[in-house]
Length: 259
Image (cartoon, rainbow, N blue to C red; front, side, top):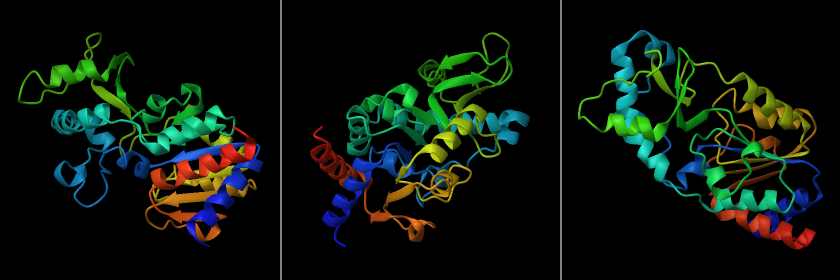
């Protein structure tokens, strides 16, 4: 089938679904100019990821972590929502989106107008910094200002207790957030249609979400630039940018429901 036929088929599935859940991955963020850290030429080739246990154990590891974060945070902070984010906000507005489960840490869904209570951030968020000792929270911009005061990096510490500070994002080796994961699993298992957008579906446990949905009987639509391991099991697959396909699907949905 050609793209327009598939777009119409996707719009029909969404229009008839009672509970639609979107699952968004790095491919959605890259369309806003945020680099995919894992890809060739990405951030991790220049700045190796710091594992959580190393961050806890070593001042040197914490300095490496914040050196990378000082570079990457402004890119995330200044990014703007793209057509995918706006299309999902529109889908919520017309009453056809239950929630968004996202791997992304950039809060672009919020900036696009999606309701905060409908966005489940399973990999955390970069705009907040946590003290790992007393759990006090700081705005990331406040910490960025401290990092940019000097050329050399000094790992910031909590003003209250002196404990190590870390972005409220999930690092390698760090436990996934229990509350958000439980909510995401429940939402995945209770939807009747999942949209998997911009995810290669190879980073676990996040990549289980479409499988949870299908296991509970939901239909699955995948939009991603490259093939995924579960394309064969999806109802519809678009190998394309989400920002090129999803807005067209949403427009067709609006025509069908009179939105």
